[in-house]
Image (tube, rainbow, N blue to C red):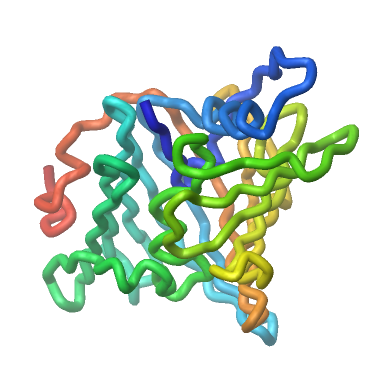
Length: 254
């Protein structure tokens, strides 16, 4: 069964150690996936947009996710400021790595499906793209992984997707103790130009598991950045399936 990891799910990884004495790149990335495994999750998030002058704009949101039969659905609801309040975003993973996405904009009072041509576009003015909100190719069935370096604290793994969407490759630095990604570099289709870098700035224990509580995504061409902070996290809690429907996306009611 193929498995995928959303960009928010990167923040929700488990805590046991590898049993392998000399893990391969595939084994390392499989462990990264294993540590985010949960049937459901609920995250309270603060998103801070940082422009090139250092000025900031803050947004609060909640993200709910549920995994069933290896497929993950994610709902994101913006709580503040007033200009984006009640904006809702739904991502549903389909077969063969495909993902369908919709957004509800209160000003338009309707939902709109995100087209494939929009995947590289900015998600709500942040440095995360719609593609980032869908998945990262850690699954061995979706990318070729190669261990390019190792030190006493971390592994560095290059991942080249079998089917290129937003990025030509990623390079991930993985913490040996927690198997949390400490840094992810995203490259253009030429596989030599870095587009963005996602860096873990703080790790804490939430609901009994280590979590990257503060991460920053930086866009190299503009020097713009987005800080993502996990304020609260809960796992394996009951979540009605009705949350992950276009009906709830449009009405905000179950």
